Image (cartoon, rainbow, N blue to C red; front, side):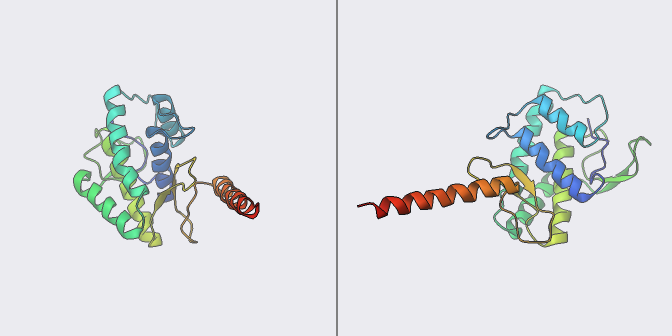
Length: 193
């Protein structure tokens, strides 16, 4: 079943964040169990109309799409991110088309196969399209994975400043404090005869 949510949401930033949030629930990590309930909650958060029906096969295809999309988030630089986005779009995207899902939503762009495209095709193609626009806007990698060893959560770079390394200020602070304490512990150990 294809989503009725516009491919770029209310903004390209929303669509990019939706990709990160879906990635987080589809690929488990520390404190992030994967499951259908979490997936449906994220889809609802971004305005997916009810009923939201995700079969076991849909979930398996979505998880594979998430693994593929994770490569964009893990890219080390803008060129690698662009190459990964282009590769995914060349494999899965169709020519852009406008749809209003039979008048049930406003007109918006899709690059999946049709209004009846699978959840995985919709997720992968709409996410790649949003990330491609963000990359072009910023001329920088559009997304990343949190550098905190205990996190790894996906995030989207939407600001104009330096490239982010952490999903949140809390993770950045926690990681800096842990590294500082490790250095201090190493310094005090070498100072003791």
